[in-house]
Image 1 (spheres, rainbow over the protein chains, first blue to last red):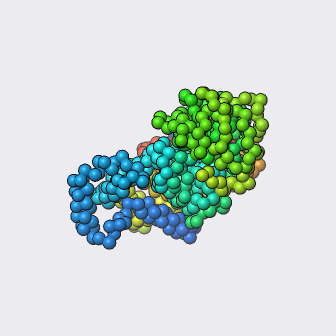
Image 2: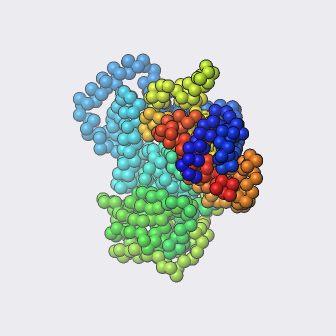
Image 3: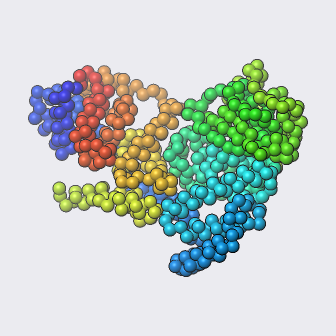
Length: 426
Length: 193
């Protein structure tokens, strides 16, 4: 389209917007009418594509929107102090802070962990800081800081192999039948775990659980009614079927996941003990893999399939194994989450200070297993802990291409008939 | 401008958007309710224009507002231009939806566009079908689709589109003209050239 015609088209579209008909407009451009007509007819046809919203749907959307906002406000609202007038709250908290600060206990409590005598002081101080923070922004920052502390505390307890009740909040990064990754921690989920809300990747989850040398087991998980919706919604279809989870309070679906086909869900069940599935897991994902980092204890090393506190990861020839990794050792795993939920490890690194199979491994302290030829047909994933692998110093279980028992992306020998989290790792 | 159109314009473009945004950042329910009331219909029209399915458009429109809350929570909310931000999110939500849909084709390849290219009568007679237009829209650039959706989907005046996109009115008019021409070429090349 040449520049002159473009200028005329701009004028015509202006006239169209002012309510003139195509014929009225073209009457002013007799020389160019033949060229302009199809352009204007196209523009005239466009508004027919839009629809008018239903008032009822709009109201429902509004109610849901405001309910979500109310849920967001909830953590910032005063709770324990609600019975006091606001000005009184200030006095009380200021006095409390002064008393606590003057005792010098605060500093000592800073490094305490759940179960320590001073841990209550630590949490009280945090609550005071939250309740006395002036603005929502400051409160949010504190909230995030304290949420990170909870995750760090859980990690330290697990590193030390200590048993304690913990609470933490984090984004759901992976969902497998017996284990989720929340906030960078592998968390065992079993039939006794109470799950409220709809499990979906990227949603925030509040986890209550118990740490032990065998890992962190969730007793309850509460999922926020909506998650990091800015993430691509397609990854959410990797969640285990909602109907098969003991959802107590199903949340309204906010994301377009409701329009997404859930067929991929059938792919998520994966055994925690299985014959080596493939040499290099086939890249069946059609979406960009998402990088996931988490920590956990190595519970099994069955060739290309490792079990990290219940979470199955695929170890390939491209996986970087740092140093010597043994059964029971705490490790940090970097993995790529595929579209079907499969985790392909890119790097596995021992966590400093964790015992190399010494007390950190769920009842099995034998180091350095033979990673390759271990085929366990047993349906019990917990038996991963009772293997007696060959002690060698370093074992990079480079998968052997010829050992590919399962050319399909799906492990066909899954021992789980249901994708719902039913196994207990304890 | 008549009194009625002025009133509509006041509803469409809140003059104190900065104040409204400040209150929204505090999750003020009144402010959030006003934002929903002000923008819901417009965002819905924008999305329905692009996806062509009512239920999908309803879901995606709710998703836009859910993302606003997420942004407010994470302090990624817009600082000055709520309208532009919402339409930007709407465009991303639609793109995500299309990307997901294309991954698993659910219908046979639509041949209507190809057949229309050889039948300029439809466009000249003003008898374009919605399916034909919708299909042709998908062949435009994202920016062209965005502008056409704002203008003909949401029905925003040029100056509002300019404000939302941070461009001059002249630039928007030119973009609109080129998008319409490109769309017409997709529909009936021989009738336009």
